[in-house]
Image 1 (cartoon, each protein chain N blue to C red):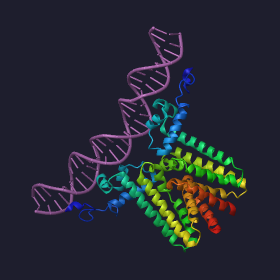
Image 2 (image 1 turned 60 degrees about the vertical axis):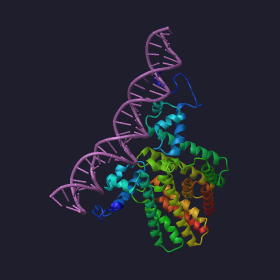
Image 3 (image 1 turned 180 degrees about the vertical axis):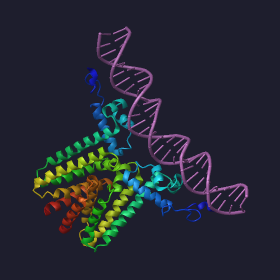
Image 4 (image 1 turned 135 degrees about the vertical axis):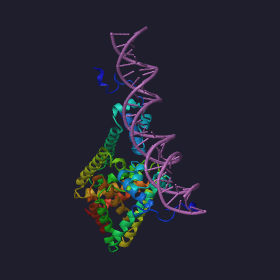
Length: 198
Length: 198
DNA sequence: CGACGCGGAGAACGATCGTTCTCCGTGATG
DNA sequence: CATCACGGAGAACGATCGTTCTCCGCGTCG
């Protein structure tokens, strides 16, 4: 009967940080994994940062690899939701499509910006972890599909999607390496040229 | 007197693989670090792959970090030399500039291609190793300078350099994640549009 | 021919990591 | 009030890593 042991047992016994244990673990994972890399963050650091005991942590995520994949999944969802919310506030068409690059600019300017979490994770573990590689590919595919939708709204030919995707990816990488937000504006300018030529 | 202990002592005692110890270590480092990542490759794997004893390895490179930076330095030089040789064989101007993207296509199609070694290294250790971060920035700066020279040869405005740089970076990342060489052609098409519009 | 010193193979060392286990306090239950 | 099961803190464990040390063979030089 009581074998459920799913959440807090008898309904919300304690909730120190206004969130449940899984949420606090994922918050800590997102902050630490993104800032320091996957291998550089140990389970003990996650435990300290989240305040969730090691035992509970391993019941929620049976291995570090599972936790890493959960981190990537949630980051993908949040990242795309943020982008969609930002661009969705602009009128459909060229303006919304170009807003993607404006949003990149605000992202690049955030403190602690360190490039694309999926590119970084893929570079670090993609060769040895099929799960990480698959998560990175899924993220990029989803981003491309979103971009394709915006391109279609402008009536531009579909192949423009790939060109703009390259500009966006290049801007993310270049902003991460250089530490500047300027690549977002440069990408927007180039995108405008491609859009006008299409 | 004999305190020099620089190379082989009394002139080339043995050279199993047609190269000196430092060269063999760097060859092994380039292959293993690029294929598996920096942290995933231990000094013991380098020793086995290079055939150079641990003692000698540590005399050549006093720490793993020094070896990693030497690997990045040499990879930067070789990468740019290959690119320059390929593009330099084409007539100066638009053709040579576009040849950069052709060369990217041949690179992407190589077996074992796993993206930009500098982006991968930066994502993995850039946050904790200033040397790795500096090497990555130096590589990207050098590539940008080379591209700027080619742009200047075409008579196009200087700001085209940054736009083409974003296309190239985006192609590298996208090719790595997707495992396809197509991004090189897409980037070339987009570059042609930008070039025509300039 | 005998002593020496360099270099290689690999054991050893201390640190750290992912994962599991032990011990103890606590809160609910009869 | 006594019992018990659960969860937390953190020690323990085995593996692995970067780095150093030991031991030994072998070529060199007086």
